[in-house]
Length: 100
Image (cartoon, rainbow, N blue to C red; front, top):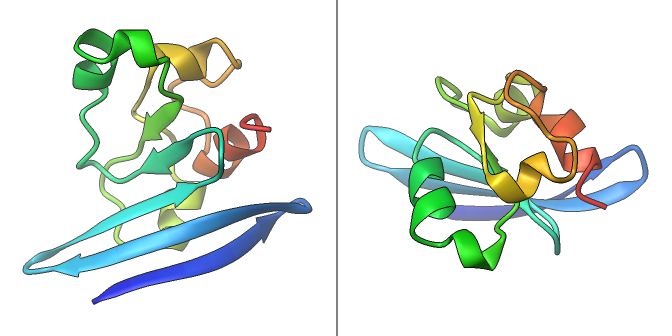
């Protein structure tokens, strides 16, 4: 099952996406500029193979719900995210707010 839900964080709109897969869930919260995602995100791939795209993204591990994804510290972030002041250890929702 796939669910897409609009969410508001400090008057900014994002879309929460959850894909229920066998034995795991895939989760992301996104806007037009970037996204945060569960541990399935390969930040090294984005930074190395897709560097020219300047993708703005962050990865949180060990999360099972969108709420946890928003509250979890980011384990890693892309180079594009770092340019916006998004750093590893920052909560997911704080990173999203920098993606204006």
